[in-house]
Image 1 (cartoon, rainbow, N blue to C red):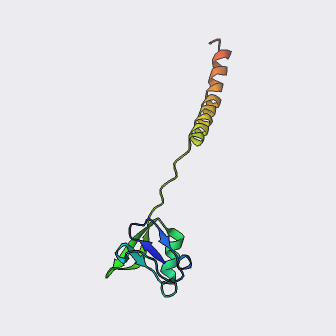
Image 2 (image 1 turned 45 degrees about the vertical axis):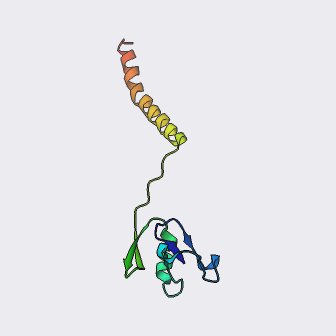
Image 3 (image 1 turned 30 degrees about the vertical axis):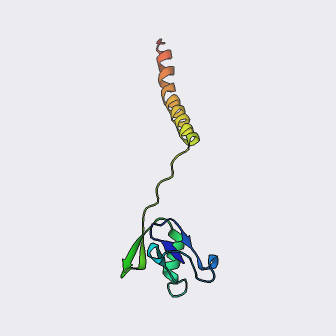
Length: 105
């Protein structure tokens, strides 16, 4: 597997069976899927939410970073507002009924 140092993409051996990735090796880390199987799987399972641990210009491990929380869609935001309004309406209804019973408006 190769992983670009800027984390823009990864390529797997199955995508390039002859091992010729055709990129400048200064821009990538090469991870052997056999001898570095644990690291390779860790990258596959967590990419792109990783930082690199590098020793002697070689990738030796990764550190997991927090995934950003997904942004809510306009529909989800609207649904939250409607729910909050419904809760407000239910919570103020007893006050309105009590006021009317006491002769208020």
